[in-house]
Image 1: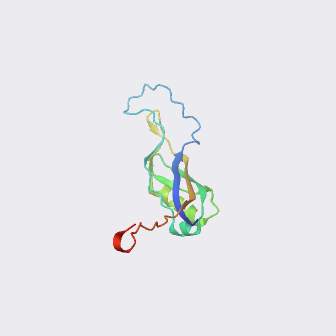
Image 2: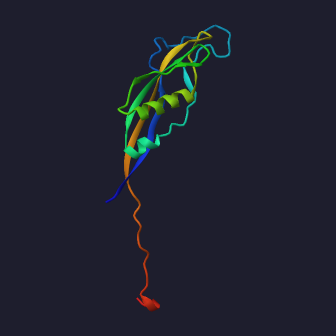
Image 3: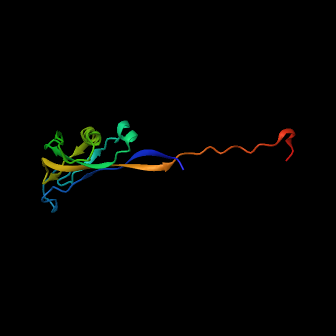
Length: 142
C-alpha cells in the first residue's frame, strides 16, 4: 500500500495560564466592562510550511506572547521549541499575526504574558488508488 504524507495543523490556541489573580469580584466601578478575561480577538490561520510537509516534520511550539496595557504585542519568544526551526518560525509568525485583548481588572487593562501553543502533526493517509473501469469485451458481449 502506498502512503502519502499530509500535514495538518491540529491546534492553534492561546492558553491563559500566567495570570496570577484572574478571579473577578463584582466591581462597583463605572465602565462598560469592568472585568474581562484575556482573549484572542482574531487568530491567524496557521499554515504548515511546505518544507515541513515534504519532510514529514511534526512538533509542538509554545510562544510566549507579551501584551502591553493597550493589547499590543511587545514580544514573542519561543519557550518550548519543536525539533524543527521551520515549525518554530511558523508558530512565531502565527502568534505575531493574531490579535489579542488583554485582561481587564477593575476597569484597567493589564499588561501580561500568555502562551500561544501550536501543534503541527504529520498524518499519513492512504493515497487514492485508481480503479480501472469495467470494460466490455469487443462486440459488447459479456
